[in-house]
Structures are given as C-alpha cells and as structure tokens.
Length: 153
Image (cartoon, rainbow, N blue to C red; front, side, top):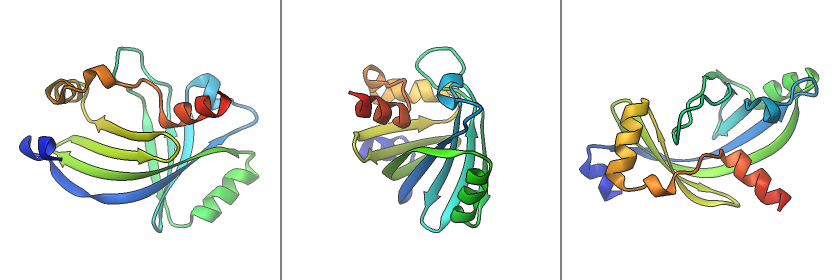
C-alpha cells in the first residue's frame, strides 16, 4: 500500500494463517472474554492465550501470551485430552507492514472479507488510524466474534 510506504512502513510478506479456537467445558472463554487459539502458519504453529479486553474505547487491549510449538497435531491432541474442544476456525491471508513497534496487517478473512488490523502502542495506533482516515471504520469485534455472529444470523 502506497499510504503505508509513504509513512515509512516496510512490507514484510504475505502468509496464510488458520486460527483454531478452543474452549473448555469448565470455563466458557466467550463468557469471560478470553481466547485460547492455535495459529497454524505453514509448518509453524503458535499456542496463544488472550485475556479479557480492557475497557477504553476503540482500541482492543488485552494480555496476549504466545509460545511456538513444533507439532500442531500433538499440541491439539494434548489440549483435547485436557478437555478443550475446537469451537471455530478462522482462515485468512495476511499481508504485513512494519514500522518500529507498529504493525499493520491487511487481512482477507474467509467468509468475512477485507480488514485492516493495526497493532502497537495505543497512542501510535490511534495516531495512525487518524492519519489513514480509517477511524470511522473501526470494528470492535474479533474475527471470531464476527464469524460466529454471522453463523447465528
């Protein structure tokens, strides 16, 4: 994107990601606004825990802890043995641009369409959203929430 290159962002590549979301019978992550996911990207997989979103406006802030895993099938088998069950998959093609500690992702999410995701320190994210003129298009739901609400409709 020219607007990003003009602002010093460097293109870091395009990748396909599949996010496998899991829930546990003793703890409803939807009700607690948490998420447990395994992200598969090529031969790489990352196990992630996302804490509840912090209140405070259009920017979604939450604790996020990730660890790389060498065998996606085995980590899913371990989680399954612990009672976790798959609730949904989110598949997307992502193009990433980076400038310092800010990352912009241009995502095509299967079943939903195109999105821009901006990650980084809150003040820089808000500044960039304003610079790009996309503030009126901010979505406060996750891709998982959007897909699940679409499935219910």
